[in-house]
Structure formats: structure tokens, C-alpha cells
Length: 330
Ligand code: 2RA
Image (cartoon, rainbow, N blue to C red):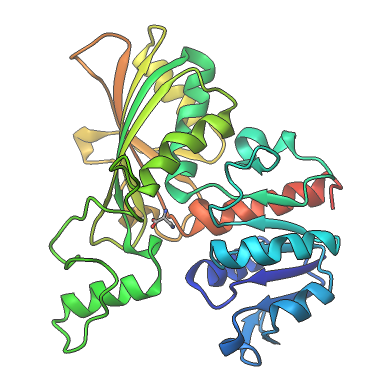
């Protein structure tokens, strides 16, 4: 497979290369793509150096699959050009996710919807992916009625400059990059992405819209608050779930423990629960702190953690590519 990684020098692009390598994806030719300022530099893949090429040259090379993590503007301009050249694009930006004719895919949930005609496939938002990995199996069993989610998001979700800001603040450095409107060290910012007219942030709007498309079910309500915290290993989410039907707590735990891609970490008597420290560098979604919400019937609380750069972005994209190859859709 001739594979392009567009945004190869970015945080997610670098993890895409790592995941392709780890999972021994059948790459016969790698095409690293980045902005003009990086053209000519190189990236390492499977111990070999590959020279970064321009977008135009990469389109002309007609890769079989292009994994994109280069921002919405670049994707909106170049994904269609790759698609017209016969490439299947898997894009990590938000621009295609809610387009009616584009598939929004978490392989464990809706990969079967993919066809040869899907030339631009949207990778969901990181905080969406870890949420639906848990909501979907429970929805199938108990029918979701209402979901309230609060997130505690890693600075890696913003990018390398945000990681640099946090580290500079921790070490009280002279020069501190100002990515966030306030200090992030020893702070919590209820401000992920930009504010929309309704005073929700775009991150919260992604969380309130993407799950329904992925799960193919808009029969439940969902509200979100997204918070940035001084953490680097992954996103955490506190989730309150009201079901249409009664549930058995032990059965909920069994269902989740048997869900591919989900790991149950739930033994509070021994201080066992998900944390970014445990999730960092891993591809699974970790769930714990599962307990009844005693304030109302048919409702429970739980806690979800995942590495936002891996299952939240790179690994999910590579898993989509694996599905395409395994099912001869490319
Ligand atoms: C964030 N989910 O965490 C967004 C984009 N990666 O900032």
C-alpha cells in the first residue's frame, strides 16, 4: 500500500507513523507530507529516512490512502484533490465530520458502513471517540435517554505549542508560548477550541453532535462541558448516563469488560480506576468508577480515559485504513 501521512511533522502525524509501524501496516511506499517549510526535511519510518514532499507532489504520487492530520483549511483544500486522483483520505480534522455524504467512523462501531465510494472518511474528535466506545454497547442494551459529559482534556489535544506552554510554566521559563488565554499550569480552562454564538465551545458542540452520527441514533439528548487541564497523557471524561430502561450494575460492567477496545479498571477498594498516567501510549479506552446515580432511577456515573493522540486520533485512523484494506475497499 502506498500511504501518505499528511501533517507528518505534527504531534498526531508523528503518532500515525508510530502506529503504522507498531501494527505492521502493509506500507510498500511511505509519502510524508507537510507544509512548505518542512519540504525536503525527513522523517524516520521503520528505520529508514523518508523525504517530506509538498502537497502537490503527494497528490501527483496518487497514494492508495492518505492519513490527514493537517488542520481543516488544508484538508478542505487538498482532500478533494487526493480523492479525485483516486486516493482514499482519512481525515482527522473537523471539516468533513458532519457533512451528510461523509462517513464519520469508529471502526468498532460503524466501519461496516464504509464502501469503495467513500473517498473522504472523517476521523471523529478525540473526546468523541472515547465517549462512544463506552456509550455504544450500553445503548444497544439499555437505550440511552440522556448523557451529561464533562471532560478534562490533555494539552496534547491542542498541539506541541500547548505542551511547550505548560512545560515552560512548570519550569518558570523566561519565554512562555501563549497558546491559551491564561496560564494552564495549576489551572483549569473551561475553554477548548473557540466559543460559538450560543456560548458553547466548538469542542462541546463536537461532543454533542458527533456521537449521534457515529452511533446512528439521535434518540437521546447529550450535553457537554469541555475543560482543558494541565495533563499530557490523555483525555478524561466524567459521564452521567440516563437510560430508558433499568440496568444491572454488574451486567453493565460485564458488557464493558467484553467490549473490544475497552478495558474495565474498576476496583475502588484497591484504588483501581482509569487515569491518563495509565492510558498514555495505549490504544484502549479505559472505563471505571461505574456507580449508580442515586439521585434518579435508571442512571449511572462513570469515568473514561484514553490517550487522545492514539485511539483519539492516530490509532482510530489507522484502524479505519486496516478495515479498508482487509475488506478490499481500497
Ligand atoms: C482538543 N479534541 O483536545 C481537540 C482537538 N484535538 O483540543
